[in-house]
Amino acid sequence: MDEILDILGQRRKLAFIPFALFDRDAYGAKAQQRFEREGLVVRTVTADDAGLETLDWAEAAFVGGGNTFRLLKTLRDAYLHKKLRQRVSQGMVYMGASAGANIASPTIRTTNDMPIVEPDSLDAIALVPFQINPHYVEPRGHTTHMGETRDQRLAEYLEENSTAVVGIREGGWIRVVGQRATIGGTQAARIFRRDSGPEDRTPGADLSDLLVVGNLP
Amino acid sequence: MDEILDILGQRRKLAFIPFALFDRDAYGAKAQQRFEREGLVVRTVTADDAGLETLDWAEAAFVGGGNTFRLLKTLRDAYLHKKLRQRVSQGMVYMGASAGANIASPTIRTTNDMPIVEPDSLDAIALVPFQINPHYVEPRGHTTHMGETRDQRLAEYLEENSTAVVGIREGGWIRVVGQRATIGGTQAARIFRRDSGPEDRTPGADLSDLLVVGNLP
Image (cartoon, rainbow over all chains, first blue to last red):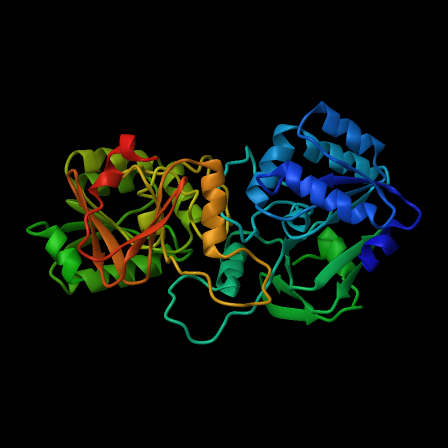
């Protein structure tokens, strides 16, 4: 919350986007209550024309976590993904947790979530040119489970795609201001690229090189 | 392998489908070698017209595991999903492991895999009317990881869909012959439905009620 308030600065008008969870009303009410405690003026975005207007009103948007497919489908069906992109280009602050961070990537191809619904496209808002993998965890040791580890899944992603992926561990975040990106929080972020091994960057480290698309291997 | 040979009976002509892995040639060669050791005649399916002909030749198909999105996209792009469905209706045996089992469901909406590529639809081969969740594992105990557990993901699926899901644990399988489905292997399967708690069925138990679509809650 300290980081959120620091990012917001003097801005007070916050739009909360609850579509990643099934019960939007409950999620919106909970977030609204929490953010209002900090003196913010909060409106929950709805998946209709009124929602587009709420984003026009807002100085900042916060997108909550849950299922990334459900979130993206709801945004795309109501054209809210385009409105979000437009508003950010006009200076609106964008903040997202988990699924909400994931959709700031070009696509949701690095989500951990189950594809419980089918968006018309996996293309997301593309506020940054790299992919985010939220809740990144290293593979555990020996197990009898035959399912893929996270690293195997990300390696599969890089077999099919050349865009770099940033794995964000619990307690970590990325803050982007203009052409500058920085790792924040308590945990290192891990960068996965097609032709080199993973690279950890600790909190405070610069990530701006990943904002330059041409620099992506 | 004992179960596979039992299912095959007198059939010897097996088509292996390697599309869930990136290196199809290596996967095909490995599977071919293993199955030929059992006296089978094996051809690896290619993603083209020759692949359609291989399925016409085959008395049985085995679909290997890997990434379910990659598998489904490759099948759909080459119309092999329709050919598989047609050949099964003509009596061809279908066998699948992991992703290969998953696509026997109506959709791949209950896959655990990362959506590294984008099929034109998540609709799969629909050889059975229920969803399969392969590599099912119960939630672990206390953890600091904030990502969803498998049970939470399946609950999210049931928030959006009414089709029942069968979670298959490591070492378990489902065998379907005509209107009869049976749990096999060493582990119980767990059935998830929208309006009731999960139900375990042990190896040997009948699952035929799930083949009757009208019976699905």
